[in-house]
Image (cartoon, rainbow, N blue to C red; front, side, top):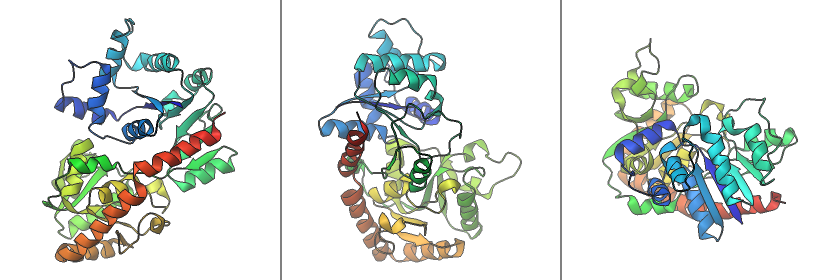
Length: 357
């Protein structure tokens, strides 16, 4: 099967990556290989694991204009890679590849006329949606919507659309890049906005107010997310962290905290659960619905009911190294054994085959 994967990477990540890496002398394919070696997001893992099971795969990062420029130059195409020409260039790449299947991430600016044009090349269009979206999106050219959130799957099915659940996974190749040295006590990595992350902000402010030694990484605080309100969390903020650096930080943390976004609706299953356990850090997350379908609470991960419970459990597991390490080791083994990409990619393959025509 010829599979075309389309992703737009976070602009913050691309800025971070190119500040650390000069790939100007590489050709397009070598450039892509170096970018994917940083293990940012899921699309690189989809790309590698689809190839491992025998598929012909093309991955395009539509908004990586440095890399897109190389693709154009290597084909003597006189177009500037920029936001204005982004869709036109990606469409040229799809036409060049002639895929059997097209899979797009949650980049809703591509919906509408772009997907209609893609449907002239292949009718097998699949889309990933596990985040809030505008209700007026045009889904007419999408054969099946894939989501890691069962609530989204149920909602799409109620609307008469094809939808399938595909849980998040962890790329076990990352483990080879980790040293397993525990130099940090408690960390949280992720977004901190009172608009979409109110629950986690409240929880972290509660912990900070009780003197917990937190280390916060990600995006939000470096921009003074509440410009007219001084946040007690700003003193705990360290830096943005992405890709392999993020995984190494998780691996260095005795405890990794996880809080789902507010729209999760008390349903467990975000990426941080798999990233933290995959990196052999003790995951402490909310006692949400279906969490036991992913990991065994009390054996592989720790869950909390409220802020007081969270604070108590952090204190307990910082003081009991042996118990903490036993649970984090079991969580790591469970993540690799039940939620690795070698398993998930076959589930993904089955969805594509079931709906392709």
